[in-house]
Amino acid sequence: MSFNSIKKFEDKIAEFFGAPYAVAVDCCTHGIELCLRRQNIKCITVPKRTYLSIPFLSHKLNIELKWKDENWEDYYYIGDTNIIDAAVLWKKNSYIPNTFMCISFQFKKHLPIGRGGMILLDNFLLYEKLKRLAHDGRTRGVIQDDDDVTEIGYHYYMTPEDAARGILLMTDVQDTISRKWSYKNYKDLTELSVFSRKNNAQESA
Image 1 (cartoon, helix red, strand yellow):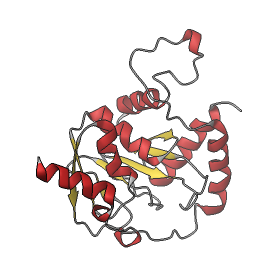
Image 2 (cartoon, helix red, strand yellow):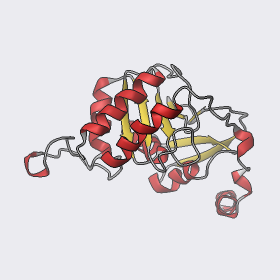
Image 3 (cartoon, rainbow, N blue to C red):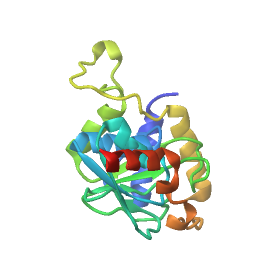
Image 4 (tube, rainbow, N blue to C red):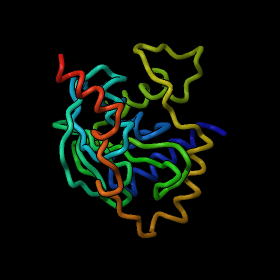
């Protein structure tokens, strides 16, 4: 199966959400991570009620983590950035201009590929950079022996098989009503030991 299926899936998702471009990745969290890396963000502010992989990025990227109380629905912004965690969003023409909107295809989501995500954006140069960043720094469609990798990349690309499955699933779900997600679907992460220990350590320093 060729990488053409990935481009076809990206185009379909971009058209559905009304975004000029879409970059397929292996999961939404990695999509957010790539956007944070691309913009060299030094601090992330996330809602207390969200999925825990997002605040875990602060440890992975060695950046500051701040919490906020936010009664969000469908999506939220990562702090003061233009990066949006839209993992649970499924709505036609919902792309917000000048942002990086990251969505998820995890098995509980509206398009349940099982694993996968997409970065929606409207900047062509950053679209090209993020494609390479998600694929080990390589140029998609160019064999490794012929490709001159110019910067560090990450092994976060979507497989052609998952993209093909996404295309098939879109036929069945793109016009159906999506489940509504909000902060109410998540517990307060600051109550977890892994975060409370870190908070206590910072207060004692």
